[in-house]
Amino acid sequence: MTDSNGTIKVGEKIYDTKVMPGTIGPSVLDIGSFYGKTGMFTYDPGFTSTASCESKITYIDGDAGVLLYRGYPIEQVAEHGDFLETCYLLLYGELPTAAQKADFDYRVTRHTMVHEQMARFFQGFRRDAHPMAVMVASVGALSAFYHDSTDISDPQQRMIASMRMIAKLPTLAAMAYKYTVGQPFVYPKNDLDYTSNFLRMCFAVPCEEYKVNPIIARALDRIFILHADHEQNASTSTVRLAGSSGANPFACIAAGIACLWGPAHGGANEAALAMLAEIGSVENIPKFVARAKDKNDNFRLMGFGHRVYKNYDPRAKIMQKTAHEVLNELGIKDDPLLDVAVELERIALHDEYFVEKKLYPNIDFYSGITLKAMGFPTSMFTVLFAVARTVGWIAQWREMIEDPSQKIGRPRQLYTGSPRRDYIPSSKR
Ligand code: SDX
Image (cartoon, rainbow, N blue to C red):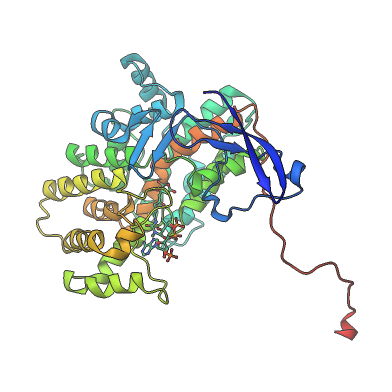
């Protein structure tokens, strides 16, 4: 891949620039010296046409509905691998050998416990605190317990912090859930795989042995794979920006969790299920579709639309298949929410408003139905998204730290406020 020359014409002036090609996908125009040459900033709120970095981790072709993890199609990774294999792939760039996978599983498993004092940390929350509030706080608080892995200039400490977060997020997530339902925290068990361990920490009670349903565990593990990484989405960009200041890795991931919470982003799975419940029945769908199309109504179909995908989100297809698989396994024959979801999707995909705006179901449209069937309350849906996305945030954070061209992120602005004016004493206002 070789750069080529480009030019930018502003008025009568022509400025040289560089066109940098990617392996696949759009090339970029290097405008790093644009301000120095022109005295002007480029302007792109929402970064719809702006590449913030160079990355080798994940590639999305929004028009084709393609998602690649280190070059491997999401359909194949989700079908053949497990979540920890995906974590290894995203972190190291290659699929692990059997020995590498066994070693990685062993290392993650033995970091799943959290410092015992973390349990006391939870007591400060009301029982009805949203689990995402608990996650933002508790993940940020990890930096207060693991001082030996906060020096980001040390590759060894970066790796330990990475393993700790991949391993401890499920434990903290399960503790956040148990705290809201008033049940005792359940310790991880080293003889269980990653996702089975998480299910047991969430749903086991001291009064009886908890038996993991392997079909449910496999389905949730696949859901984690689908959520693991997704290029420079809002929360990943938050983690990169926080990391560019040199903040410790736990603080950066806590910032990512905070951003993911928004209903336009990772909070959409919780919002989508609430929307399906509000619609309630297939008969009510036309009314809500009309509201989604009404410019004067800020109602949106949650779980629909995407900044990048202008085709079907490939993850949504796998999520839909997983929803049916889980409902069948659990003997849920006619889930009214699934009926509403399937009919809503059918209507929306044939409605000229959605077709013209290229609005398709995204990963959040079917995930809520599946997670609810598994027994998770809606308030835990985004927490599960955060558990899975932690590896993506960490892989992107490490890539940013190890990028020799990395510098603190500091965007500029178009200022349209008041020109300079002198202070007016209060007696004269
Ligand atoms: C995730 O970035 C990622 O990769 C995110 C994610 C990941 O893995 O990290 O994929 C996870 O966040 C998925 C998205 C989850 N969010 C939702 O489902 C919330 C509902 N969707 C929308 O809010 C919206 O589609 C966004 C936020 C997802 C994308 O918004 P954009 O790219 O800024 O697009 P837009 O808001 O400018 O919408 C374009 C047009 C607008 O109409 P016009 O102003 O052009 O007339 O489409 C309309 C919007 O009004 N529109 C919708 C709609 N989404 C967009 N209309 C009705 N319902 C919707 N859901």
